[in-house]
Image (cartoon, rainbow, N blue to C red; front, side, top):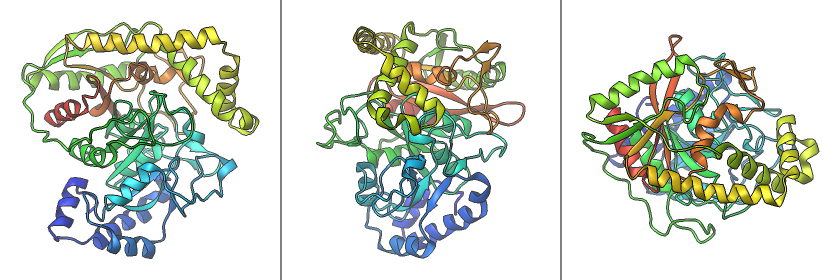
Length: 440
């Protein structure tokens, strides 16, 4: 049963072909088989409680479907650590907004998926639970920071997953695990968590095995909420993904403004380029101007980290401490310039996509790497001076505030997944999912 898509399972439950109890039980069998080696689900509800909740799940689009949520999301009565030893025994008394919506839609919250400390970094490990491993090759990382989520879906332990994405944290693990991962436009999925509610850089997203499953979960999570001032006032319908892409104008970028990319990634993506052309897309080499995007992202990220973690910086992992120190060193002029540049990056991408329907580019600059390595220190002969540089292929898109979808696109000669990043017009998530469905 775990091999079936979330959409198929939801239909089977509605048709009473299977019961929520049977579905949840099947996924628990799979978790017991694989989680000890993959280490994706780090807190798990006991089976009998989960089965009872499956029996009691309210009618809704996700009725009876099990999900483990990222360990950054508060779950009432269930341990939520944020990947930090400072919160290793923390049990919230209330659900996050995202978890509220999952429960209301009938989903069964069975546990939590692993994340790096406070979601910082695109590799998934922490001092409490250790590292999550890639189901395609247990010696490799699934990426991060939603690495536990992506690994759990790829291993068939849950049918789909939530994730959060500041720099790359939905797209990177989706690509490394051969999945679809949607970073939507800011405000699509509301969030009432701590921090600046006006900040468009961190967003919540969805990860799944098919575009239809991404859309199903996204449909439940998207929509207005007065607790989030950026939330859009319209609900997002679950659209018909049937689509003929003939004549679609696709801008193709091998390196998003000259970034170093490993040759095995570039080679694998040629399969995706050929597939776009085969379904009728008009593909041209083109990209917007990304100059200044890295400074913009790193300054605004550093500012946010300094605001959030200054009081506890001394007790955080070294790379996170360094992020806080960087944020503390910034002056008003540099921050103001970065804010202005963020607006400019949005305008550049918006104007670029008046001439094209979508931008296609690598999700990651490297293939999945050794799980013991915190981050790649060199890419195609170029040294990485810090752990933010290796995922600039995603962070450069982040600062444009445009939606992006990671799509399975090919494999390395060793069989490791490589992802294609599709970037669409502002609030154009449905169009990205339609194109992904046409390519599937």
